[in-house]
Amino acid sequence: MLKKVSVALAITTALWSNSAHSQELNALVWCDHTDDALIKPFEEKHGVTVNLKEYEGTGAALSLIEQSQPGDWDVLVIDGVDVPRAVSAGILGELPTDQLPYDSLFPELVMEENHVIDGKTYAISEKFGYNTVSFNKDKVSQEDLADMTKLWSGDFSGQLAVYDYYLPVMGMLAVGLGKETANLTMDDLPEIEEALLALKDSAASVGEVVASQTAIATGEVDILVGGGEWVTAGLTATNPELDWMIPDQGAVRWSQSIGVFADSKQPDLALEFVKHVLSPEGQAALATSSCYWAMPANSAAGDMLTDGQKTALRWDQQSEYLAKAQLYPAPDSELDAAMQDVWTRFLAR
Image 1 (cartoon, one colour):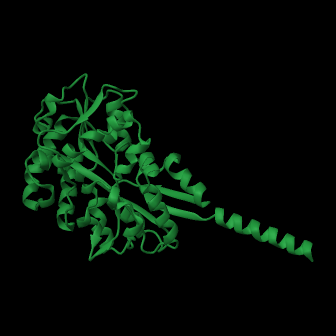
Image 2 (cartoon, helix red, strand yellow; image 1 turned 120 degrees about the horizontal axis):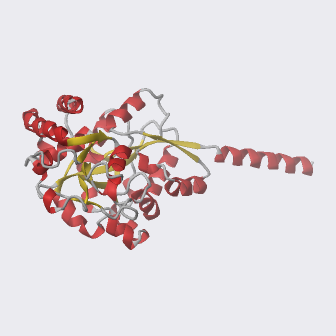
Image 3 (cartoon, rainbow, N blue to C red; image 1 turned 90 degrees about the horizontal axis):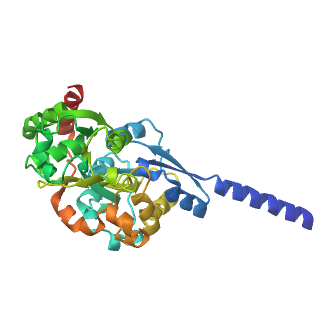
């Protein structure tokens, strides 16, 4: 009898262990979340497998979610300005603020206007940076780029590439034209489109994240419009000639947020993943991801970064940069459709 009990316990333990380690978490993320340095520590600590699906642009994420079954996804990474859109669609669930590191977030990254709806918090900032100008300082000087309007003046014809995402680039041009991204209307589009089409006349290429990085890293172009630390910070060790700057008019600040799906089948584990990403160790790994570098939202990550990494990210200049940057435009559905139409004409030119 004792042997039978021992065998039964052994089998039960083995089954439990296999079940625990076969548990899976499904996350819809940006490419910077796919590094083992970020994911493996969580998997090993919790004995789970994290399945990651990359996407670019909130529209693509919403399309994927619409094609999925309820409960297919557990964690969502999304543009901070698009959190209200996800909440109104019933995608995100409420987060327990007392379990998240708000005390050490950069103040500008709390973003209550985006994350808190009807008194409930649905997301938290995890990483931020700027869509601005990356450049090869051996070919172009920072002084040449101080006035953003020079980008579409024709002075740099054939020397520049454009990041293929309509919201930050159109927002950036709006800033260059003296507009506020938070208050854009249909009346602003003709002037923005004129500048955008002039920019296309000077562009050698238009590309997504990897294509944009490759274009400037290989010397195909000298300037990347819509670039920033996310393009060059991780490349400076091997390409010291690459740099980035914010023009006099300012730049667009992007901020990515993370939350838990309202219909997640394992919300507690999903919350643990959010907490892991927001931990100093998780933030340092996310900030220096192989896909792209950018500033961690949690200032406590500074203790986990090297001096060289902090220099590349302009850690000590963030107060100045944050003051000069405006958030992505957050258009309503009518304006968003019109902006996409403008972008389509830009791409087709």
